Image 1 (cartoon, rainbow, N blue to C red):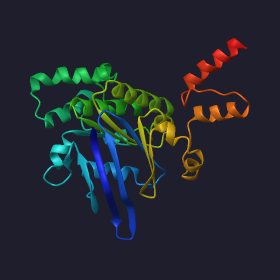
Image 2: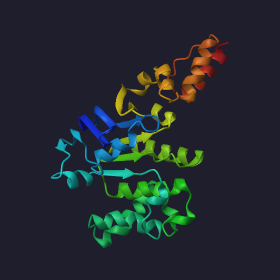
Image 3: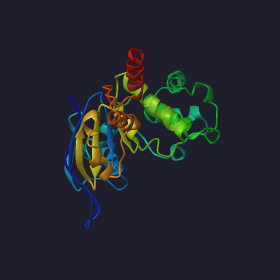
Image 4: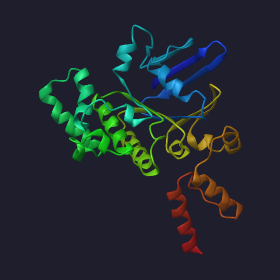
Length: 275
């Protein structure tokens, strides 16, 4: 079942600078889709178009069979949450609890029910011990966890992560990627992640590669990551595990564990035990 359908989407900030050029793709309900491309490829513009922060010059976007237009935009936004790049720009409340409560208040959740919801979603993202903390005392990764809790608390059908880990240190990035995996494993939400992180791409269900505002590759990560030369030409990378797999093959060692480092290590251990 299609959750999102984008058809012949075009957008330009000015007539001489096309940013999105006849882009079409679909996203299946419950899937984890990554959209990747170098700087200026149009990734974040796609995210803004999908929630109506920008208006397309032409083309159509459907969410849950609803056409994105002036009549349906607020109904669609009620079903879609977004986590932006800079965690410092997302805090509204004076404390973690206040920040999670903000979206609930906008959705007119009864005050007597609110505290239990805040505590529930803070616990889901591992921030239950920080409910009274001020935002300035949190790390970047913790701030993003709070932003995610605030989005989850509003019970959307889809979450868009717009470069949500790009300003985090390696530990914060790993924590947020692990949290996205946990959310996906629950199977309740459709996830779209705009990202530079090729390791995240390898763990998704579906990847869309953009270049100069056009879709140049679209498919399962295992298929896309085989296009090593094309990805490098697009100033992208391939996962370390896949590089490692290639080096093993050069040395006469063949493994069939795909792009996961854990799988290859396990297979190498088995090969070593047999030798």
